Amino acid sequence: LSQAFSSNDGVRTQEFTVYFKNIYAQPPKVHLSLTNFDFDISARINLEVLVVTTTNFTLKVGTWANARLNSLSIDWIAF
Image (tube, rainbow, N blue to C red; front, side, top):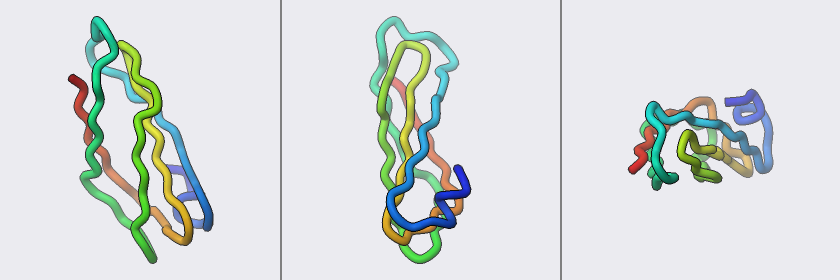
């Protein structure tokens, strides 16, 4: 995560591209699961799958207000 997640106020987002180990014949469904996180002050988080292709997906992580997100872990499954 960028430094902005733990030091600023307001809306903050960051996008990540995750590549599948195998290529799918058609874009799969992707399910996200928040498995670990470290917040200061308050816990506000949004996880969103933006785009799914046969080879990868784009994940958007966001927080807002005075939440300070220090770290997080996300598991995912494609099917």
